[in-house]
Amino acid sequence: MTPKTFPFSFEEVQSLARQTPTPFYIYDGAGILRQHKALTDAFTWCPDFRNYFAVKATPNPAILELLHTVGSGVDCSSMAELVLAERAGFRGEEIFFTSNDTPAEEFRKAAKLGAILNFDDITHIEFAKQAIGRLPELACCRLNPGKLKEGNAIIGKPEEAKYGFTPAQLFDGYRLLKENGVKRFGLHTMVASNERKAEYFVETARIVFELVAEISEKVGIEFEFVDLGGGIGIPYRPEDDGVDLSVVGNGIREAMDEMLVKRGFRAPRICFECGRFITGPCGYLVSRVLHVKDTWKKYIGMDACMANLMRPALYGAYHHITVLGKENESCTECCDVTGSLCENNDKFAIDRLLPKLERGDWLVFHDAGAHGHAMGFNYNGKLRSAEWLVLPNGKPSLIRRAETLDDLFATLVPPVRVRPEPKPGTTH
Ligand SMILES: *Cc1c(COP(=O)(O)O)cnc(C)c1O
Image 1 (cartoon, rainbow, N blue to C red):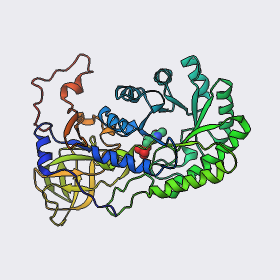
Image 2: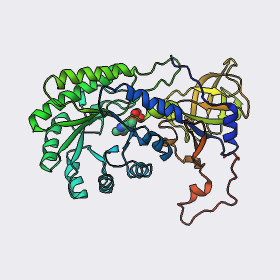
Image 3: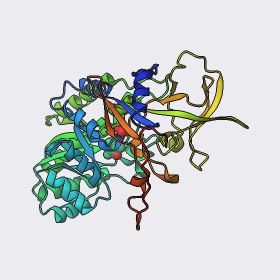
Image 4: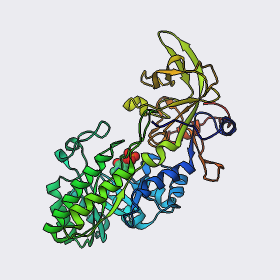
């Protein structure tokens, strides 16, 4: 059980709504730091444990800067993410570059920043060398365990995933890295997404440690770190339990002792690249009811749509809803909560029991902090919303203004100009 509470008052939300139009996002900075600490606390046994926050989850430099203050790294997978990480002050090995189908200029940018390069395929090693000139001293390869590991609903079966080397290919991969002067090595895998079973991560670690042992012996190298990827799940539903991180931490420690340390191998540093676990529970989408419609079903039409939060439409994902000011009313109305896109799957919830709603009511969608705003899009000309970060000292800070029609049309040739510009405080 995970009770769903909203950490801000109705007055605070209304005050933000006077400055930026609804819908908008609010992130709880103190909550983000608590999530980061919960993860690192599970690995206090591991010197230099690091989470490289997956930038794609919440690509806003203010949030990256906040995480930087507590020693987080960043995981980037594109040029834009590398630039955001750089802008947020991350340097060198604080940046992990896990990409696939990688363009040459992204390898160049990552190398210039001194990021840890994580190769997705053996052919990328020569490709990156051509792009950069020479390979850096530290490099990593991404394992796709194939049938060694079962997948889950979001990420699918590993053997059908486009990512990574097969276990057999890794041996040649590390030989090639060694021949090219690489001196320090890591091994990476990412096989889960939104997984809440602690044992899943321990099993993955065991697969990786076995390969670390075999490759170390056969290729004659030592591993400095293993990166177990992201994918630690969160309880989206009130009846869900979160991942027991002490089981993850202790299980990985035992596996490392048994499979590596006792057999005389160096203990690699453990890393993760969690995005969702860090920011997911700490972000909220605030939206107001535009229309209440009674036809074959009851429809609550919001001023937000799936362009603001795509997960329900994309994965059928559950996002808990709090109605501000009606928290204690009984949920007697069975509703579909919709947006205004010309797409019938533009729904935040289907057959959800909610209090009796009327035009102007304020809904908060929980657990939208990761892969929420980030997955937004402009279909039907929908504008991307503003984002607020409530800093750990309680002060709200605007970290992205709302997009305007002028922003949306800026790339048209010839440009389309909208005058006058939408005033702050008007709903779009
Ligand atoms: C998406 C992704 C992550 C983050 O996943 P979460 O589910 O947000 O923890 C980490 N690493 C890689 C390579 C990814 O693609």
